[in-house]
Image (cartoon, rainbow, N blue to C red; front, side, top):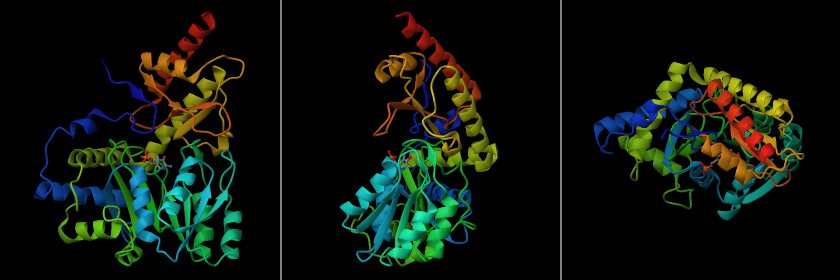
Length: 365
Ligand SMILES: *Cc1c(COP(=O)(O)O)cnc(C)c1O
């Protein structure tokens, strides 16, 4: 049995070398693993050019854990968070902040519209209590790319702090922390970095992180304490997922040899173009306007003319070795196909052949 191609970010399809890096046992307090952790933190910081200003704090868990830990560490009881929402991951940020008892305001846009920096500027101007703003860079609900530079500029101009969920963009869509003012960038191991799941991390302005002692109401989700641990002895506070760390370091070395985020984005862009053109030819329209679609995950409408249930479409493609994603929209009937992971246009071409064969079967039935 060969592994299926995962078009489900994430977990997503990883390189064999990345999975091979997990074959070894590491002592978590051994100098070799301490060096590996240091390499991990340095490489993650370098991906966003944050060496001079930010610190990298990795944390055990999926992406949601790092979002929760970052909000817990940086939002004080007197702070007020403005969450910019045009999809499920923005909603999740608001839910997390509310659950920990922080004051939250929400600005909403339809799921097929980008966040508008002008409205953000207006909201900040109208409410001096707002201290932080949260933005989802690529809203994975649809694959929409929000205007990071525009939002970051108005947040900085208003003297507030931007918290960026870059989970599904980090490693491909560049975030240059020397040029774009972001207080905290949050991401995880298993999306554009092409590692395996199990680690989230935040790149946080050092000054802000240093001032956040004992702010978090949680012991394990406290990034100040987690950072102090790394700074003191290079070790993780609690049991680290050693194999996941080893795989992510290997994946980061491969990102460098591929040519960095720009080269990776070019590969994903080609995957996405081939996918969208091929799906259109087969009768599936893109849900978003093409200009708003990031080459990360594409959302397609179920054709109204064709009686195709997602479950049977999924099963038929899975039988041919491709796993796709259901839609996550509240309105339209859709499904999603990822463009990221260790895949190229040849894999996408094979997927399109499989989709065409499945459609032929449905028509014949
Ligand atoms: C994947 C993702 C997350 C985190 O999801 P987990 O399932 O907890 O890993 C958060 N935000 C965005 C935008 C994502 O794509």
